[in-house]
Amino acid sequence: MATVGDIVNEAREDIPLNRKKKTNRFYLCDEECMSGSRYINFAFGTLTFIITLALFIQIHYGDYQVVPHGSVATDSYECSEIGTSILKQGGNSIDAAIASAFCLSVTTPHLTGLDAEGKILLYNHKSRAPATVIDFSGPSGTSKYLPRLVLGLAYFHKEYGTMNWKSLVLPAAKLARQGYLVSKMLVQAVSRAHAEDLYGPLEAGQILQHENLGKTLEKIADTTEKELYSHLNGINQPSHSSALKETFYGYNVYVPNTSTGLLLLHNLRQIEQLNVTKEDTERPAFVFNVAKTTQTVYLEEKVSNKFHEGTFSSVSVIDTDELYVSLVTGMYNSFGAGEITVHGYVPDVKNQDKASSRLPIILTDATYICGRRLVFGANTVGQATQLIVSLVIAGKNATDVIEGPRYHMQENGTISVEASRTPAFSGELIKTLETVSPKISPAAEPYPSINIVEKHTDDLISHSDSRGGGIASRY
Ligand SMILES: *[C@@H]1O[C@H](CO)[C@@H](O)[C@H](O)[C@H]1NC(C)=O
Ligand SMILES: *[C@@H]1O[C@H](CO)[C@@H](O)[C@H](O)[C@H]1NC(C)=O
Ligand SMILES: *[C@@H]1O[C@H](CO)[C@@H](O)[C@H](O)[C@H]1NC(C)=O
Ligand SMILES: *[C@@H]1O[C@H](CO)[C@@H](O)[C@H](O)[C@H]1NC(C)=O
Image 1 (cartoon, rainbow, N blue to C red):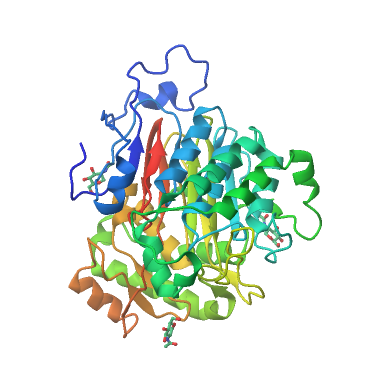
Image 2: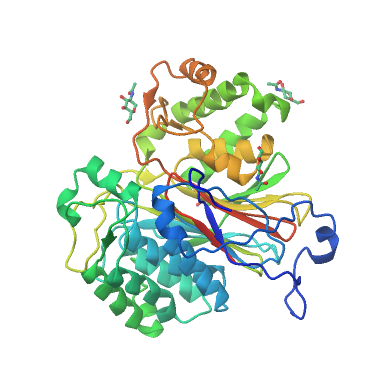
């Protein structure tokens, strides 16, 4: 059970002990892999108190689940919960991701909002049809109450949604009206962006309401699908394309066919050339090699001229039908253009000169269908590389990888480290990184967070990064 001093990253509902009886659902890994599962682990808990708790204390969870349902990991407990409630009502991963993304536009205005841009990676592991990407990072603010994120989600709904639109938007509208708990990260972001004028003085744990945003979300919810879809036209319609797929250390890596996706694959290919083994990953030389390779690729590819690291928030979902969704979203700056429209949202910066570096990622074991499958997103190629290397080469579990220390490779190849984190990099590793980038600076808080949902055989594990203050939810 949770104790004060640990970290809360996942909330679960009680798991029924009779396994999959009397259901007609097709479980991908039913017979062939379940028998050998070593990860069975029961835990039961009451979750109602966790939201409040999570803001102040840290509780650690990380066990596998026996009966597969679905899971959603985001930067906010409310949003993960809204996502799983949609899955419970029979929605698929797409429906859940839409509802959670609307929710994040309410609870994390420093990271995302109705005008935020984003990318969605969708993969069906049952049919194993080619993964697809929906990209809504076109120009900001084409319509007053249907800005970018709304149109991106509308398109996603039109193509793949199963539940009615209204039921996906209303939970966020309700949350905006009733108020949500302000996170420590939102307070940090306000102070860092000097954005005190936006919402007035804020304290972590207080309830914040967004009346106008609630009204706008209600209006969006009340827009019929027919009308909604009619707004998707040549100019503002998100792009829809096939994802790239490449093999890295026995895993299929799915990323968008964009300059960041290509850059990540290029970097991974360079790292694969190092021929390292799992044992090597414990050594400082390995940290050096990964950082040096990434830095070289950044400088060769002139990343600082091409990409801008904006804010970052992600939604990772796996449902019972093996539909995987990784949605990444964000704005050019924290709190976008730094003002609130009459519609209650913060518009993003206009005239953005560089592409965003964030990218959604899916990894699947290339040999065994029921091997590990991982759904997450990363704010930069450097971050994605560190994550993939730890998950795939070092073979660490999602919990360890997400909560582990990370450095930030900045666009110009200099490194900053997350200073106020436990665990932190050892002095030895910092020295090693200093041989890659002589002047190591502390990274700015709040740190970008990584939220992951992982499946192995039919067992699910999900983890929201304590950096983002969220809790993943599964049932
Ligand atoms: C992840 O690995 C660590 C050891 O590195 C272990 O203590 C922890 O229990 C593992 N978590 C899960 C969910 O297996
Ligand atoms: C990626 O995009 C490029 C150009 O936009 C295109 O030529 C190429 O065929 C695409 N690759 C895949 C796998 O779709
Ligand atoms: C890795 O292995 C390949 C093929 O076995 C070899 O050509 C290459 O030189 C090796 N790279 C390193 C850094 O040892
Ligand atoms: C690299 O970029 C960081 C962050 O943008 C900046 O603080 C630093 O001064 C730059 N370093 C160099 C050598 O240009």
